[in-house]
Structures are given as C-alpha cells and as structure tokens.
Image (cartoon, rainbow, N blue to C red; front, side, top):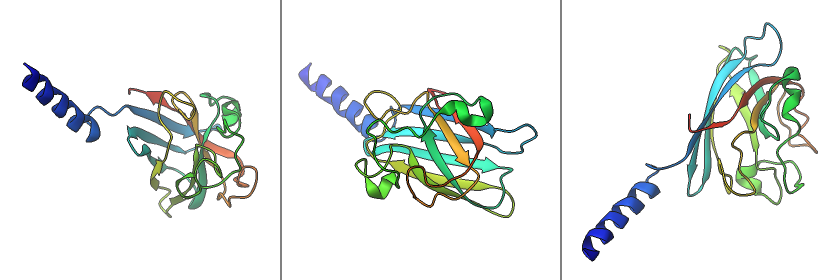
Length: 172
C-alpha cells in the first residue's frame, strides 16, 4: 500500500510541476471609448516561477503601448474605474521581470509592440506574482492597455490614457 501512495504522490508532483494543474485566468480586453476598435485577450497561467501572461490585441494604433495590471477589476468610466497601478508595497514604477518587486509594481509588464496591421502580442513572466492567494495576487484586477509607450518614468511610466481594459477572471 505504501508503494501505491508513493507512486500517486510522485505522479501528482510530476503533473503539478509540468503545469497540468496550474491555475489559469483570462481577460477579455475591450476599448475604453465609444467606437473604439481595440479588442483582444489575455491568458494568465500560474507556474512555480511566477505568472505567465500572454496578451494579444487588435485594432490598436501601431507602435509601443504600455500595459499594466491595475488595482481594481472594473473598466467603467473609460477604464478609470480600474484605479491606479496594482502596487501593494508602494514600490517605484519599473519593469518587474528585470527589476524585481523592490523596484517595480507586481503588474509592471512594460510595453506591447503593435505592428502596422494593428495587432500586438506579448508573452511575459511576472516573478512572485500569482492569480490567487498571497500579497501579489492579480485575479479580479484589470489589465490596462495605454495609448503611449511606458518610458519607466515615475510614478506610472508616462503611459498616457487608457485605450483598452479587461478584468482578470480566474478559471475561465
């Protein structure tokens, strides 16, 4: 009987470390102004190394656009209902993958590059961030796509207005 439990635990750990049981979330990104063509989606997957976020957008002006996770899961009032950047520690603004949580907000994802066809794609890993549980959980918050490039200036990267917004929903 003990050997059977060892096999079950071993298989379970193997599946968990491979991501087979990873928690997932999604966000449907829509334009924040009437008549906007901005739309897209985000897929978020927990891993032992942090949160992997993949964002795909369409109908966006070509160029680099800042993308961040904001405090609240609401997109009303042209995206302003999402509040400011999700920043539970009061850290400076930065680029989380290289700066870490002491020098960046948990949702500082940098920039998404949009081509001449209006389509943009970004895959990024946010270390120490999760969908649920813990100080840096982002489930139920909003992803905001901004009109300008994130120049990493303080306090919010000079990213301009909010052109796209989607609420992060866990398990869909």
